[in-house]
Amino acid sequence: MGGGPAGLVSAMLLARDGHDVTLLERDEDPAPERAGEAWNGWERGGVKQFHQAHYLVPRGREVLERELPDVFEALQAAGAVRFDSLSMMPPSITDRTPRPGDERFVTFTARRPLLEHVLARAAEREPRLDLRRGVSVAGLTTHTYDGTPHVGGVRTTDGEELTADLVVDAMGRRSQLPKWLAEAGLGPIHEESEDSGFIYYTRFFAGSDGAQPQPRTPLLTPLGTFSVLTLPGDNGTWSVTLYVTTGDQPLKRMRHARCWSAVLAACPAHAHWLEGEPLTEVLAMSGIVDRYRRLATDGRPSVTGLALVGDASACTNPSQGKGLTLGFMQASRLRDVVRAQLDDPRGLAEEWDRVTEAELTPWYRETVAEDRARMHEMSALRNGGTGAPPSPPGPVRALLTAMMHDGDLFRAFLTSRCCYAPLSQVLARPEIGERAEKLAAEHQGAPPAFPGPTREELLELVA
Image (cartoon, rainbow, N blue to C red; front, side, top):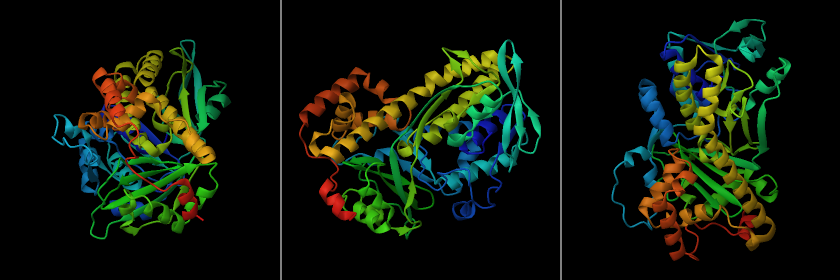
């Protein structure tokens, strides 16, 4: 259920592993014939963020290249842009000697419509994959298996009943699964949910000569009471997002192109991202929920025959760009678990819960904690200025300071941002945590690495 990137990759991996797969997608419009038509010619009404900023971090590129090499090649042929995360290394790092393994920080990234177009066209060619668009699910069919409630299929709004060995929820942020489980007498499931509290204001640009601006900062840069997110796209395009807290009423004027451009122009390390042709007006998005769902308690499944992937499993503030990659990682691991456990529904449910909790949930927890800390900092700065508590916590703050002066610590930070290891694991390594603390102490009190307008200047810019 769900034909977005996580659903498409899950379906293709399962089909290529020998399973007959039916993929149901509510939106009717098929992918256009040509990739170049995807941006302006494809409507995905069920995906609120379809034309918002997206980025495939290097771990996601690695999964796609390993698991679906033909799709990865098609993505490159369609204009995905090669981006080396090490290109963001600040000039304050003097030792720029390449290290073994640096190639893992490279990705090929694209805007969401083009990426999904490539995936959809590949899925349409899979002989064991039946992709049905314009089909909405109305509910689940259930029975009991080995004493546990079991999902045996779905019922569409047209009244058709489809049976399955496994039902996969890849319906993203708008998944209605809890409602359907409750209607079947199987709820409630464990769910944690909170509004991340951010509003995003995004514009897309294209370079006149097909080139993109070179980054002079990390992709995500906090600047007082707002943050700047710059992302490379495909075919010489890029996006810039300014995001603020929902309670910051004056900064909501960034929805106007004049105010938005004035703020970005006032950021010395980011102003050059304006040097292109705007492809859109300012695209606003709010109501972004951090949400986590689990179909087990203490490892004991509450229902079998059902698996959650992608944003249907856990979704977070998209500014760190992890959503696509975590969905691809989960799709790959689902294929592995199904390969070993499909004939044992209870064993499959237990193993899928174990894998998800061990390999995916830590990313959710860490991202939510970072969201909360940044939200608290932005709100405090807005209300009290210098009385704001430091954000993020001490060890992370030390790394963020120290990495501006040390190539190995910069790579350690990228290891987390590229989804190779959660930041808590990176900082647990003594050679990283201790080195970061020492170097941060040497640079304590230094001016901000990336200056931006003061609060007073910011309010004047949006007036």
